[in-house]
Length: 201
Image 1 (tube, rainbow, N blue to C red):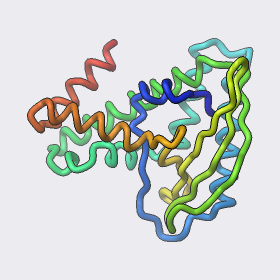
Image 2 (cartoon, helix red, strand yellow; image 1 turned 180 degrees about the vertical axis):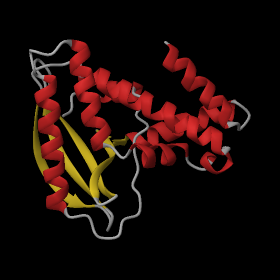
Image 3 (tube, rainbow, N blue to C red; image 1 turned 90 degrees about the vertical axis):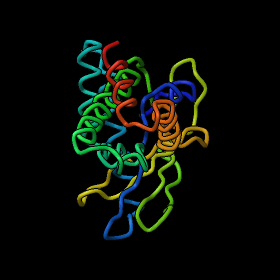
Image 4 (spheres, helix red, strand yellow; image 1 turned 135 degrees about the vertical axis):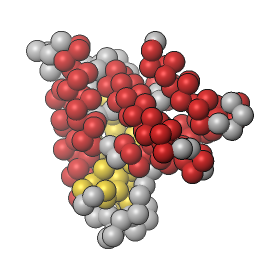
């Protein structure tokens, strides 16, 4: 699943990801099975020679929409600024965040073929989530470790964070968004303007 090196992750608008409260402890075997299944789907789409680049990206995007808890991730990434955003700004932000997240991830995943991944250790992080480690390989590249944080959302396991070389993507994106808002006088509207500009490129 996972074709991204550290530099790739740094430029993604991943803003990845956070956990949400759950009613029961996250089962590590369930989390590992979920990542295995989602990873197999992604690898099959990425490595399918019968798909055009556009079709490959759309297939990957569809898998990501099902696998990532996008709304919870988006709210976490916006952090304390969620509370000061108007309802209209909140809706606009979530729409732009989802589009940006899926576009960037699907674009990155869709660029590569010959990707393979293998499950490593799975461990409980809290009562609400588990961390599934994977080893990712690409042709002509060194293998790298990518950890997937999984939590229950609506009774289903969902990806809530990606950790590459010790860097949490949700925290990285949260910091970047906060900087944009602060440079814009503490207004969420400044972030929305930046996100629209990025989408128009």
